[in-house]
View 1 (cartoon, rainbow, N blue to C red):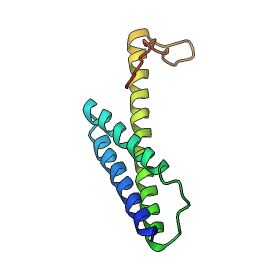
View 2 (tube, rainbow, N blue to C red):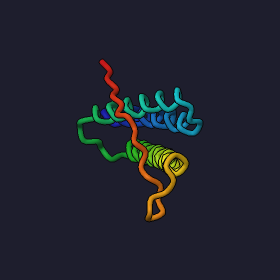
View 3 (tube, helix red, strand yellow):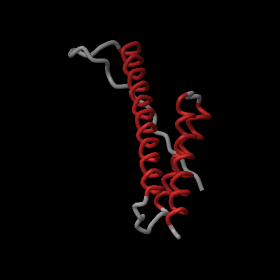
Length: 117
């Protein structure tokens, strides 16, 4: 029967997302990099479930649990982005003052490229 296998795979994917969330809660550079790997692996694993999923109690429970974990990860990432945006605004006001409209100027940053392979 396919359903228990799918439920187990969804639970394993959820575990990867939960591990990334745990790392995002204590955001040092190593944790942030590693959480990115867990989220990417979870995404690829979820994409690997190509067949339609039978709606049984096990798969529905595993799907709901995964959805909850993904929402938690999304909220953590949104808060991290807002935190960094706030610091960019503070740095802009410290380095360049304020524009006539009262907002700090955008900070010029050098482009970064990351290539793996």
